[in-house]
Image (cartoon, rainbow, N blue to C red; front, side, top):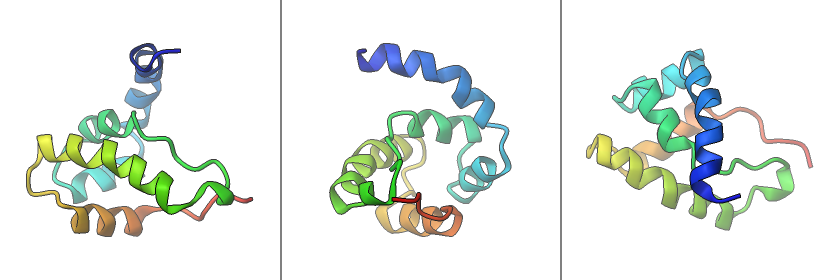
Length: 95
């Protein structure tokens, strides 16, 4: 499935997520709206297992997320994104 179609299919879920308290808190900490954060996060592929948590996956996800967020709020830099995400990140998925 191409990325445009996948993103389109995910949009209803992303809009529903925009009302979640964690998503709203992350967005507020970045000075953007929950929908803006959800839209940027749509291209990210979170780790499904602890084994998938590796530097390359994190770099690939950040290469998608950070430029999108910076287009909305240029004050978001790598350190700020890391700080906010670390504050709200849940426990790592099981292996």
